[in-house]
Image (cartoon, rainbow, N blue to C red; front, side, top):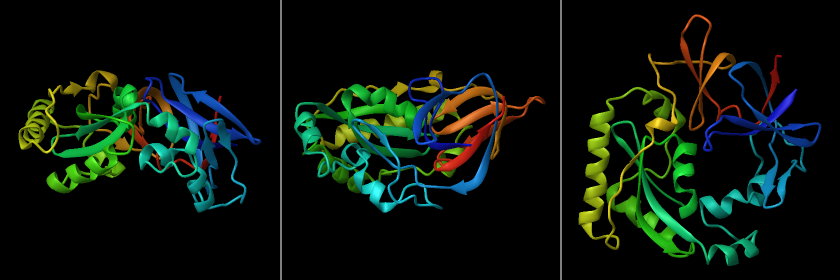
Length: 258
């Protein structure tokens, strides 16, 4: 069986990163798939700029153990903790970072940080319906403080639960667009941030068109429609659309049936 390390769809095609006999591999999901997941989980290990590394503790029943979490390079880009990678910090000081707002459905707005060049890919990775850059900074030092201030001032989410995203797979898109644009304009008029020109991007063309409200599934069996962030969408032979929370599958072992 294969050990699922990461699922991502920000570049368009849904892909799975996995371990197989201590070798890392990448699986691009085809149009038709049948995949069963076991109830067994183990630590996915950790990632450095050089690649993926297996868990030194052989930890079980966790997605990622504390040791691997501390070592993982993702800490540098998600919370600005470069303590384990000082060389990346020197590079980061020369990069542009953006403070963004991301809209999910009609009512959730998240405030986050990413490198400016990755903004649109980051929106697709999360499955955001709308996105807008509200500030740009050189290096990571100031922007994380600005993120905290904006979240505190307006009550924006720091993270959005997968259950909330799944609940908002179907919504009134025009109402959602108006609501999100109004929030962006509110931030602009508040003068909390330097002056910026609001540009709202609609990411709906990046996601599958759903003809019905999906039912949740815990396996994959049918025609792959695509993904919305970490939500994989497929259609059964009977035409029913299903959604699989792939974030919960990280760390699980799975079998792909040919």
